[in-house]
Length: 425
Length: 174
Image 1 (cartoon, helix red, strand yellow):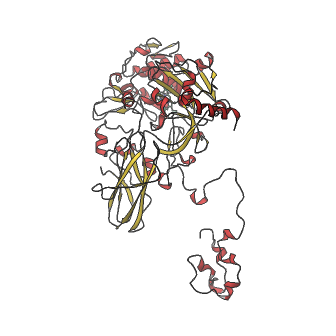
Image 2 (cartoon, each protein chain N blue to C red):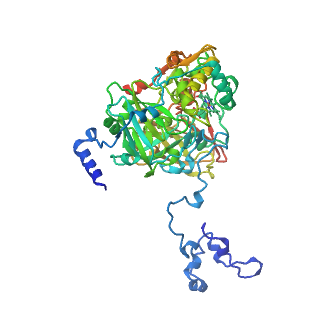
Image 3 (tube, rainbow over the protein chains, first blue to last red):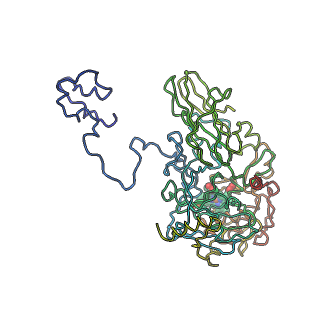
C-alpha cells in the first residue's frame, strides 16, 4: 500500500511505542474471523488506503508519468563541451509492449535540436521536377494521411558489441537503446512528388534538415515512391522537437539517420549526392577493403529485455522471458529463444499481429532452476532472413566496422540471478 | 471536418491515390530555390564561384579549426581528418577524410554546411575552397601550391574513390 504513510497508520495507543493494531493491516489482510466490536463501529475509511478518504488532485493540461515511474529516463551522455553531438538512449528494459513513449524516443543529433518556428518553416521540393513546390505545415496538414507503427533505429545501435569486451555495467539500454517505436502519421511522400511531377530521368532524392548540421542524406526514388512519409505526428501528437518538429522524413526500415529530421528540402536528382553522412558515416567498410555505400535497409534483429542486466532474478522459479524483435525488410515471422547458450531453441509467442517494420513483442514462459546459463534470442522475418551469429556478422566486415549490427544477443545469468552481456555466438 | 478535406477524401476514394492531387504546394521561386540549394553533387553540380589556395586554407584552419581537429588534422578532440591513406585493406584500417571519403566535393559541401561546429555556415565560399584545399594537401591529395575552384575541385581524385560499391541497386532488384 504505497499511499499509506506511517503517520496515518501509527496511531499510538499506549506508551513505549505500542500502536493501534490497524497498523498491521498495512502489510497483509487482518487475521480471518469476525470483526471486533471496535472495528465494526469505525468508519470504513480507517481501513482503506488514504486515497479513498480524500479527493484526489485536479486536472492537468498535459499528463506526466506517475511519480513512481519518474526514474524511467533516457540514458543521456555525460556533460560535454559539445552537447549537441551524440545520442541519448531509450530505457528499453524499463518499458513494456512495443510503443516507445515520445519523450523516451532515442535521440541522435549531430549539432543540437533546432528551435524551429513552425509558422515559417517550409518544405521545398525541387530539382528534376516539372513544378518546384514549397509546402508549409498548414497545407501539409490538409493532405490525406497515413498512420503506421514503425521502428527507427540508429545504424550505430549495438555497434559496441563488435568489440571484444563488454562493460560489466552494460545494460540493454546502454548497448541497444538506439531503437524506438512509434505510431507515425503524415503525408505519403509519393503524393507530394506526383504533384511536383518527377522527371523520368530521376533516380534519387537529397533530403536535408534545417538543423545546425544541415543533415543531408540521399534516398533512392523507389523508396520515396513506396512507403516514405513526411511525418507530422508521433504517437498522435505533433512530432517532438528532438524528433524533427515540425516534420521529418520517415523511411520505414532504413538506417535511422536517413529519416531526416527538421525536413526542409527534397531535391530530386539523377545520382546520389554522396553526402558526408553516407560516405564518412553510415557506410560499411568490408573485409576486402571495399566500402559499401547506401546499406540503407536494416537487418532482422531481436533482444531479450526481461530479464536483462539490472533486472536481477529473485531466486529460482517461474518467469516470463520477453523482448522485442524487428526487421527493416518487413514483418517478424518468428522469434526463437534459447536458455542453454544456443544448444536448443523454442519458438516464443508473438504479441498481436506483427506490424511491418515495427517492433514486435515476444514472450516465453520459463522456470529457472537457479543454475548459471545463457539466454539468447534470434528472429526470422517474413523474407526468411535470420539473425546471424556474431562470428558470421563480423566475418563480412573490416575490423572496426560497427554499423548495421544485428547479430544474436546473449545474456549470461549467474547463480545469484544477476545478468550481464556476453559474446556467445 | 473541413469541407475541403471531405472533398479530398471523396476524391481519393473515387480516383485512387495515384491520381489524387491536393495541389496545395506553392510554386517555388528561383530566388528561394537558389538560397536553399546548398548541396553539391559528386560531379561538382552546385559548386559556387570563388576559389581558395592551400596557403589561405592553412591560415583559416589555424584560426577556426585546429582547436577541435588538431594540428595537420590529426584529430582530438574532434574527428581525425588526415592520415590513414592505404590502410583500408589492412588489419588496422584508419578511416579519415583523406583515406575514406570517395569525393572531394563532399569535403566542400560538409565544411560549408556544418563547420566550424559552433558557427556553422559562417565561412565564405572562398574560405571553404581554401580550407578544403588545405585539408587535402596534408596527405598530398592536392599539391601544396594548389588553388581549388568549381572546375578543379570535382577533378580531385580521392584515394578511396575506387573502393566504393553502391549497395542500393541490390535493394532495388529485390
